[in-house]
Image (cartoon, one colour):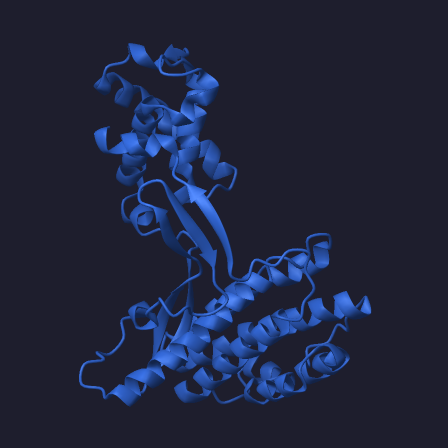
Length: 334
């Protein structure tokens, strides 16, 4: 397909032209492992790079600031919405993490935003913040998902739910932030840490299945999350780690670098032999209360270890001032 000057197209012609190449660009992006939510922007950029010769508004290399690019991006976004439907509309951008809380005796899902924003100048700039806790301006009760109604609960009960959510949310934010820096120059440490948040989320999702098999299956990923951070810390402090699964022994290998009280969290997490028995169907599955207790202990334990990992960069509570892309003001007119 020949390159073109974007200004020679009518609105319908540009839309038709994009639709003729969108599948080709999407296939390339998919094969390269680009996440679905990132593809409209990258496809729009590739379209300009490979199929457009010039734009009248600005030199081609400055196309991101033009109204033409806003129109192109809008067409690609519409194409992706049409092609992927709900899979695109509901795609998790990675901005949230799932943790658990207890409401009216039921263990429920909590979707914690991992960052938050504050407007600096309306429509122009905003702060992107990486909190390591729940900030006073946030309402963690709004993060509950498919939870029993809070109406009718007394103030004391609601305050406890708020505290429980804040503790779990603070732990998962701490884990995510403090695991971002270590391992930059060590592939083994990086490999150990990159899946820890996913392991904890896997445990949460399995517990939310609300059946015995799910709860039993949840024990192993939370154990592995604890094991990974202990081995990463051992590698940093001792230069190596033992290839064992017993969390108490792994803790003792790095106990000089961790708060002593953290070891008690391991009492609520099935370890070593108990994990092996569970994996081979030789152990009774935990109740929902036991599974939730183990999950909270694992979350707090991993957060405690994460705070003691060395890193070249810490972004806990960091604030970055972001400026709105110039072309976004044109989207409403496209």
